[in-house]
Length: 194
Image (cartoon, rainbow, N blue to C red):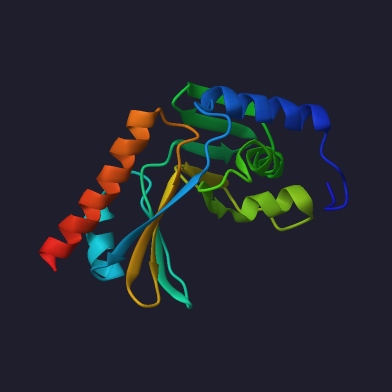
């Protein structure tokens, strides 16, 4: 398939529906929540606290000190033509090309204020778009595509000021409160250990 070719709308619609079954919104119109958490410890100190959390990601920046994410609401993977979506609604396996799964994930979750879809797109996905040399399979490899759907990001700006951006789209009100408190606790733990 060349980049200019269009994916089948039916396949994309099926993938979007599958993603939304596994990650059903609790609130249809939940807004982005941005909380100022003040000046705090270094990004490294907070990352040290978070590094063992499931789905931990540290996005480093040049105009800011870093964005930290952990505990994704859902994990989306694709390997060898099979997509696996794990979320609060269970696990779903679907036949899918990686590029179609990426398109469906962006349609299903893109544009939700306070949410982030973070991960990687492997070399093999390029083979779905153009002719690239195939790599020999080694077994036990990483998936061709792996994305986490995160509902909160802890951000540290260039001046060391922390903020938490989140959405309650996929959590009940008490779940959003617990999630927000968990982030505050991690930040406090890093302050105490610094």
